Length: 364
Ligand SMILES: NC(=O)c1ccc[n+]([C@@H]2O[C@H](COP(=O)([O-])OP(=O)(O)OC[C@H]3O[C@@H](n4cnc5c(N)ncnc54)[C@H](O)[C@@H]3O)[C@@H](O)[C@H]2O)c1
Ligand SMILES: [Zn+2]
Image (cartoon, rainbow, N blue to C red):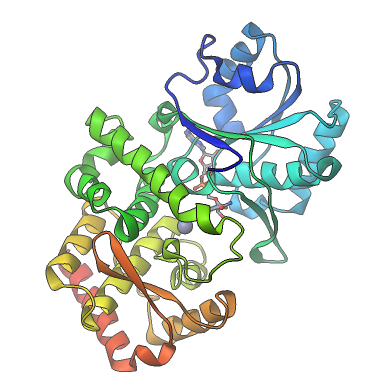
């Protein structure tokens, strides 16, 4: 992407891997990580900094959706101030999407914007949250209400971090992988279709070539999608919004019992069924989509899915997307279109689509 490199590398924290050292040498570096990630990888990070003679300080930040807020971004700024952060200093966020989001916001504030480097350690971070130019925190109960566009200097992806992820986290990442595959890349979808369960159980370790290929294709397709509309000022029609129309309300309706990735999976399944019922997506393709989602242990239905919830979600989307719901509908695996008017989705179709998923999930 113009302005920053995204690199896939093994053994990122091996003392002789030059990538991070080359970026940080001679600059004050503030490493921000979560207690969990520090417990797993903090020792290696400190060893790396020491053996490469880096001038770094390490900060632990409790990172969860509940404390992704102004106060936590301010804490990063405070730590940076106390640790002699000058104009050339750099913040390094090593953790999941919450961590890299908070670090992005803090970097954009400090001295009106200093550099930052992202080391995403979750699957969601590596293929989705960590590779755009955005950062945000929640505010007064509104998710990602305050934020910025602040491109990183670099994003470094080491698949080795995934080994310690809980399965549930890997599944949530795969929901985003299926999303990008459905709108952009049939080959990527085929990899998940064929190897999804092994990707989950091996944390993208096996089969090695296919797992790595799926990871990298997800990153590249995502970047290609973001690139022409990096600042989201060109169009409200974003294929990467697949799975992200009904899901916010589903997450909220479940009182966040449903993970983001699970809600995305249900939304994707519903969008696919709607598309098939509107005559846009062939039935065979729909079957592939539903069975692939289910095969990795992601849900295709939740009891909170109702016509009323979907209607509200479409209205809400229209408010976000320049007046049109722009529901993303798959036309085939690898290709999508948009529902531009709520009137194009008749009530009975929506209702039948929800019923279909309720039935299928009961059978599963
Ligand atoms: N800025 C964007 O464009 C963008 C896009 C999509 C999502 N997001 C944001 O990303 C966030 C979700 O990110 P996430 O799914 O990475 O969740 P997360 O950041 O909450 O991380 C989940 C948990 O995993 C732990 N963890 C991280 N790496 C680990 C590892 N290697 N091994 C074991 N545990 C590890 C973390 O400590 C954390 O407790 C949301 O807040 C969302 O809004 C941002
Ligand atoms: Zn998402």
